[in-house]
Amino acid sequence: MPERAERLHKLEELRKLGINPYPAKYQATHTAVQILKDAEQFIVSQEMVDIAGRITAVRGHGKASFFQLSDPSGKIQCYAKLDIVGPEAYQAFKLYDIGDFVGVQGPVFKTHTGEFTVQAQKLTLLSKSLLPLPEKYHGLQNVDTRFRKRYLDLIANPEVKELFVKRTKFVRSLRDFLDSKGFMEVETPVMELVPGGADAQPFVTHHNTLDLDLFLRISLELHLKRLIVGGYEKVYEIGRVFRNEGMSTQHLQEFTLMEFYWAYVDYQTLMDFTEEMYCHIIKETFGTMEIKYQDQILNFNRPWPRYDYRQLLIDKAGIDLDKFPTAESLKPELEKHGIKPDPKLGRGRLIDQLYKKMIRPGLVQPCFLIDHPLDISPLAKKHADRPNYTQRFQPIFAGAEIGNAFSELNDPLDQRSRFEEQAKLREKGDAEAQMYDADFLEALEHGMPPCGGFGVGIDRFFAIVSNSETVREVVFFPTMKPE
RNA sequence: GAGCCAGUAGCUCAGUCGGUAGAGCACCGCCCUUUUAAGGCGGGAGUCAUGAGUUCGAAUCUCAUCUGGCUCACCA
Image 1 (cartoon, rainbow, N blue to C red):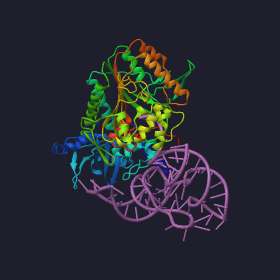
Image 2 (cartoon, rainbow, N blue to C red):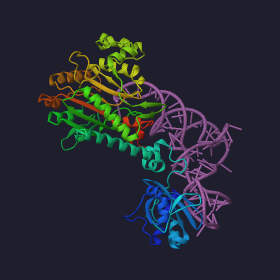
Image 3 (spheres, rainbow, N blue to C red):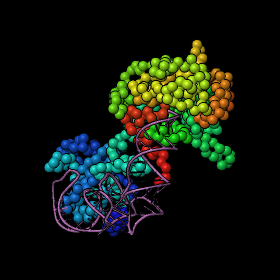
Image 4 (cartoon, chains in turn cyan, orange):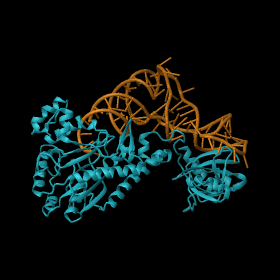
């Protein structure tokens, strides 16, 4: 690595000049953007400014040099001139590299070509870098390297840095919204004896002292409902969950889920609330309700249409679920549409396959899918007058389910029989059927008030509304195989 | 998990028919005191992803492996 050796040599040279290449602190007075915003005033007042940042470009001219300093606010040009900084400081400056952190103190001026520039009177090395940065013009393109060394991506590609600022804003506006509506943010265990609340395979870990296998949670649901049993009426959690499944542009091994539970309301109230919440955070984050996604515009303005699950399958696929009460009776319908049904799977999964193939891709503009079949909703309350359907909805846009909610099942005996049904599916080979959680059933038997519950994967939601190609783009360090 | 594509200097990329490994940026030396991807002259820098094979000779052809991307299938 010849460049590294060269920089190590410079490091020694700097030390010989009596310069500490790694000082502990620096007190800047301004950011790049602050200076640029009021540059005319700074020129008139000749006030000294002081900024700290990383050198990201150098344009040398012998006894004077322009260089670009980048800080989190943006970048600004600086000028180091032998006559002004003095021979020792200029000699040291020649040993600086692109990538080094420096502090620059001096007045602001305007160059012949009209660029506001800090005229360095004092230069302070704040950290010497030993490895070169990616190229200044093309940046860092290699996706593998961008994800493995995200810090280089953030340095080289400003739009990536901006994307993550947006993500933070997005999550904060979600949190602010829920707080403003009187919800309490809580934290519940990541390691569980029984992972529940979703159809997914868990990661397993081991507790040495107890000699006990534990699962990483796949959802937040069952613990949050225990808190509703405990007497809270409005709780939410934003937390990481883990699913041991395939990798793709739409799936992560760990992702951030938000779930909230609200006592005494049903899914209808939740649906209005969700519409309001989504519109709020989109407006707060992006300042508009019309979001570009690939070659389309998603229009989030309310109200969003609400489509009945059964009716939609009738309209779009010509299949009335009520006429196919068993898995066996439904299989020919799947085959008719070119789906070959897995013999291990139950009626619910078959319905799900049908929906994913026939319905979901066509749902581009924001809408709600409502009243899902019982078979695919093991934790949702039934409709009193239609026991094969549940009080459930999913917000959908860009052909993806961005959220899931229902009137929570609080009948402990019904919940017990649903778990038993899931257990049978597991025995038949459905690895993603839900596990029997006796502790949760006991909690329900102590009484849970009627309650609406909602969950959404933050990463996918944000990936779509930020027009990101993949969900991995909106996570700093997506899981990668070792090189 | 299946198919297709890619991997060459720190970065972005060329590399023809199999014949000594190339450019720009970055880095080093010299020149240059208002540049904007600064400029000029010169220079250093490589296990061509890895491992086998074919060949007098392989970045190039063959096979296997690794990593990534895209498409498809399944999970938010």
